[in-house]
Length: 208
Ligand SMILES: N[C@@H](CCC(=O)N[C@@H](CS)C(=O)NCC(=O)O)C(=O)O
Image (tube, rainbow, N blue to C red; front, side):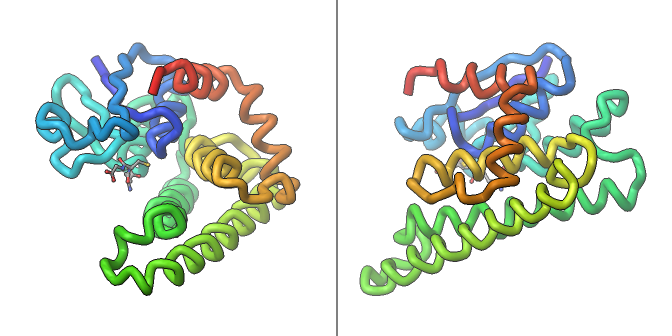
């Protein structure tokens, strides 16, 4: 059995969408970040780094969206979650590494500058830099979608589910994200996809 530890609207939505795409049975275990449940003793036994997502597969715990989505793609090859061609698969993994290592941290700087320096005088500059970088990253994703229709090309991949996370964060933090025309039209298409709709709706129904 697979169990996804997630928090509504967090980056774990990427793994949630990936799991839905497999069509395999799984269970959801909410870890509410708003209630700091990621720091509880019981969750730290699952992921000692105190982060979501974590995916328990028959008792073995996988972490990091990029690793979880690559695992799902390899375990369910018939679902074509990532391209079968190794070079194309590598391009997708590289984009997920960029999401995880650059895009996500830029948003974190804009939201939690205090996590990057204890020097209060420096925090406003870090926040501003995070906002600028995050916006530039969103523009880059918009350009990728504009070129082909999906983030990585002409077909849906699990990278699309990951890119939906950032659109949601930008909208929630009041960024003028509808100016990104390709990204916005793609989001509408994504929300019409049954697996995506089910994941988003099920997260929205969790009381936080
Ligand atoms: N690179 C990781 C990032 C995981 C991460 O930072 N998750 C956030 C939610 S978006 C979290 O759990 N934050 C809780 C905390 O920092 O206390 C991944 O893609 O899985």
